[in-house]
Amino acid sequence: MRLSRYFLPVLKENPAEAQIVSHRYMLRAGMIKQQAAGIYSWLPLGLRVLNRIQAIVNEEQIRAGHIPLLMPTLQPADLWRESGRYDDYGQEMLRIKDRQGREMLYGPTNEEMITDIFRGHVNSYKDLPLTLYHIQWKFRDEMRPRFGVMRGREFLMKDGYNFDIDKAAALHAYNRHMVSYLRTYERMGLTAIPMRADSGPIGGDDTHEFLVLASTGESEVFFDSAVTELKLGNREVDYDNREEVAAVCREFTTLYARTDETHDQALFDAIPEERRKVARGIEVGQIFYFGTKYSASMGALVTNEKGEKVPVEMGSHGIGVSRLLGAIIEASHDDKGIIWPEGVTPFPVGIVNLKQGDAAADAACAGLEKALLAKGLEPLYDDRDERAGAKFATMDLIGLPWRITVGPRGLANGVVELTSRRTGVSEEMTPEAAVARVAEIYAGV
Ligand code: 5CA
Image 1 (cartoon, rainbow, N blue to C red):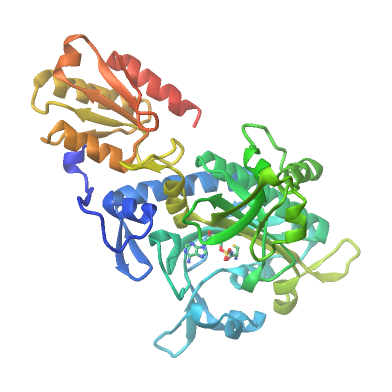
Image 2: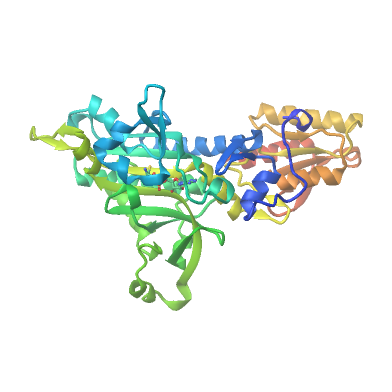
């Protein structure tokens, strides 16, 4: 992509309405535009990151054996009357009437609708286990929408729902989600700690929230600092192996880590003092096991091996897809701008031409662009007729992890410069070597 032809409306000034760094940088980098309180347009750069995040979420869900589908944003109120949640959900639910006077709502979550799909098509244990998920816009008329995409009213969520024949199978699905989420967040460069939490309006007994530590987080969290050292890394996990999956979950949930809702001071005090931490965190996901709460009230029954009709065992599992952009920026930035982890960056590398119009520099930049594209890496090439300082400032603000700088002086010696946004370290090398290095970096992402 050539910057002269792109739509990147960067702001020079700090927007007054942004109280936290992620909101400020998303506005300044031209990623989002507010259309109403808590409702945003996703401008091209923001959309590219949102798409990257969705791609990772999809890959890890499919790896875990979960199946994508797509449910609508609008739902009939009657489904929610069946579960009893239509009245319970309160003012957070946006209620709408269509022209026939039928009551509808903009879905805040999809337990009822997925249960309706299930009961219409599945009635035997032989068709289980089954986990269906989608990535779809949700609406919650939050009392205090704030911090940009962090607490929106319209927001993108991945929500998945498992259907199992008994509690043991449903808990395996819960564990599978936990492991797939750990991998998902790690691929985005995040440390997200599973913490025992409260189930709220979704219901159920077992629930964990995934929290990214950040001083601007809305949740107060209490944990053993050793939990922040745990990493899933590249280890292979067989998602069909109940014991193996459960062992990973034990590894990540045995050390004390809780939100304020479930905090237990006596247990906390038992941790060695130097490891006792109280901090703030951003909730980027939550998993729930709630058994037959929806299947019993909505008549989602299956025949078990003994031939009896029993309500199917369920859980639901969410990832805050749009919130993740904010969480990643809170975790990865400096005073010049965003620093995207390679896994989610909108462009893998930027090209800065120090002397637009110089025949050699222009040709070298075009050559780099072509060579990178041939490797499946689309660069953002700043081909504007601007000062070098302004080009660097834009690149630093939008946070591409790698930058190739091309100028007549270097080219006279056959070199360009490859710079890491994170460390600021630059290295001179031939254009071919720069392309090879960038390709090597992204081969493992
Ligand atoms: N049905 C369940 C799981 S699918 C559910 O709705 N869970 S939830 O309420 O915890 O939401 C899932 C995730 O969506 C949260 O962990 C959070 O990351 C994200 N989320 C919730 N509310 C908002 C909001 N107002 N703005 C942005 N993201 C949100």
